[in-house]
Amino acid sequence: MLLRIVDTSGFGDAVDSSNCWQPVIDYIDSKFEDYLNAESRVNRCQMPGNRVQCCLYFIAPSGHGLKPLNIEFMKRLHEKVNIIPLIAKADTLTPEECQQFKKQVSRMC
Image (cartoon, rainbow, N blue to C red; front, side):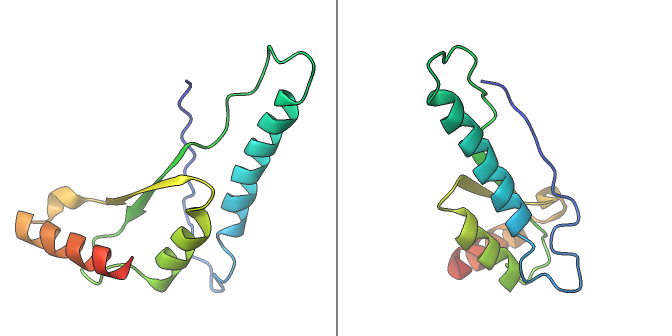
C-alpha cells in the first residue's frame, strides 16, 4: 500500500466556512469513483491504489475543545473514511492538560 498525505492547509479559514468540507468530500468521492471504474474493467491489472483510507484530523489545543466547524466536518466525513482525531502540538501541554482536553473532545463528539 502506498502512503499519500494530502494537507488541507487553510481549511475553515475563510470568512464563510459553511461548505468548506465539500472539496475534501469531493476529492474522497472522486478517488473511490476512479477505483470503482477501474474495478469494472475487463483488465484489472492496473487498478489505482489512491483511495483515501484514513483522515488524520488535527485539533488545535485551544483548551476550548472542538469548534462547531470541526464537529460538522467530522459528521460529514465519518461515513466516507476513518477519522483519527489528533491533538496538534500535544507536547506543549502538561499531561493533566492533555487529559482534560481529551475529555472535552470526547464529550463533544
